[in-house]
Image (cartoon, rainbow, N blue to C red):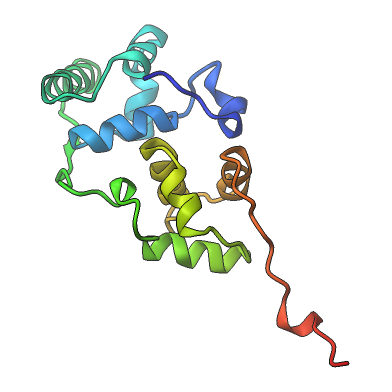
Length: 163
């Protein structure tokens, strides 16, 4: 699965930042890769992490070993490991996660449960990552728009006038 998003266009050609497809795979295999570790990799290494599959249990194990091997080779210490959620929020089509709801409220936007369910797991992952409070969120609304979600801006209560 090789997929870049339009909102990533300013950095995917050089791969200077970790693209969402790689972040998705890292969460899938339970590795926390820091940006400074990513910067240690050659362009070919970065491209390999973009294109290497990470879906089946065997592929996930290979991806994990590949990432750890690269990090160890370039930094002389392994990458941090993350617990792998057996039922991650981006796989749950029947409920809007609280972090997403909070970000939608903060930005005055709404997403129906139907719209959420129609997104791919990768798209749901992206929206969850972009809705986290410790993440730079400037791409949240562009991601909604790119995914074809009618990001309806709520009318602020102060702008309502009585008849």
